[in-house]
Image 1 (cartoon, rainbow, N blue to C red):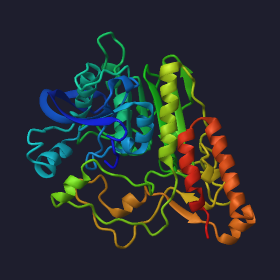
Image 2 (image 1 turned 90 degrees about the vertical axis):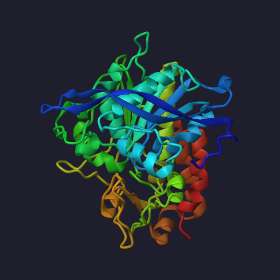
Image 3 (image 1 turned 60 degrees about the horizontal axis):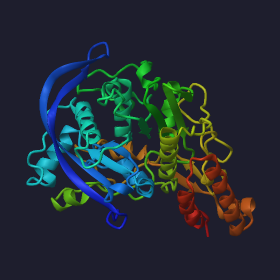
Image 4 (image 1 turned 180 degrees about the vertical axis):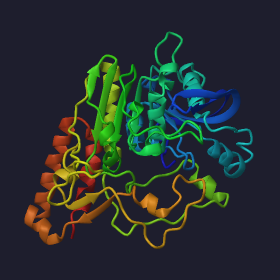
Length: 438
């Protein structure tokens, strides 16, 4: 996973969870109905927590692991924030094809009994895992639970909230199991990708189905989007709210994309490669974007946690400007997006940022189990960056030192707004010289 947990004072534990789950589907009217009940399953649960229980904050971030090799996209993005705060993390294998991959390819001996026999069980499996967590079965009994996912699992979390699963999951005292939900890089307006069917063969819910827009719930809900998802999200947006039963925020981060150039270590990648499995070669013709969506996701978690723990109301942010009647965002004279949360690399730009790329000629086709069937589809999600010519940089900033001073001023402004945390601001300041050409 690329993180030295021991040095951070953390431990990782792997658990097996047995149970029965309903196979859910959408009927011809789009309503949630049970196709089969009490279907047995056995899955695995990963927990990363402070080794010293006294150092634990009482918060656990729960993540349904991604259909691409059971990867933990949220952990990968926010683990510095989790570790700094003494928060725990739990990842749950929920997808049938991943259970099969674990059992038959990744480690047949270790995972021989892992079995999720039917698509449509995922939601009850996740609910069972959260219930077991809150009941203390995994070595920690949290005071607060935040469910979150990114990309496919972000959409999964939208369904958990909007199709009523979160409302069904309660503690013995009647409180919801989930205190908050963070939906990352997922557009509610992006067809079946933004609102997945409960089971294969279900019809896609309509583009104007109200479930695509986050409704008032007891559970706090955040949506945190890059430019890529925001393009199709406009018609399902809603206003922020501070109501007691409707606490909601939407943060759209300028100069970021669905896939960025940050390193990512997939949970099972090494084991998969040692068994002869490989990831296809992939590259883009454009220079990859250097946006830092991960830093702003950490900030979103921090303000959500403060809202839960201390009642501190988080900031509201401007939304992106959309070109009327299109799925394009309004852009300035340089080509950078207008509106949204404006990170330092957009406030003090050295490049034009776009939320898409094109695949290079050397890309290899992905295997069947990967979420995207063609390299060009994946490249559409990759952010790109077109640096300004050096003469343009000299015209705007005169010297590199002037640019770095103005970048540092923009960093301070973002820290003051509240979505860029001081510890993460230091990362941006260290990276700032790399954004200057020459």
